[in-house]
Image 1 (tube, rainbow, N blue to C red):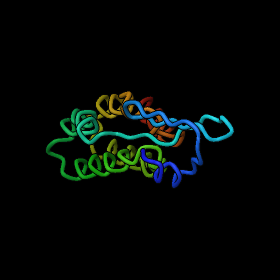
Image 2 (image 1 turned 180 degrees about the horizontal axis):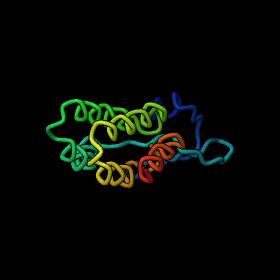
Image 3 (image 1 turned 90 degrees about the vertical axis):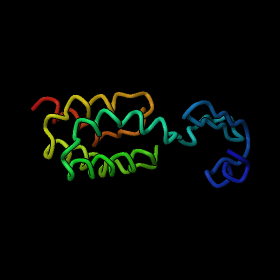
Length: 128
């Protein structure tokens, strides 16, 4: 992240560290804050491949998986309620994809993407 991007993200100075898919910044007052999460396309494709395979042949479920992947690619900017709605939709369309769906969100690359609504949706479908 260059200086202009840090300024746009609200970081006015201090330290900036980027490693893997996580950016951590420190503002002028020394407060550490997470600036963003970056998910690389190849990594995202790899994480979602088992889910895509699990719904193969179900066109509507495949479209929902692609929408879920697009939303998850936004990292911390992903809309938690959209993720949850897509999770529930995929399970309604392809109940046999439960294990693949749970594994997708357990992947370290998606750490921090699922908020409380998505986690609730995942736990609800897991224990049905």
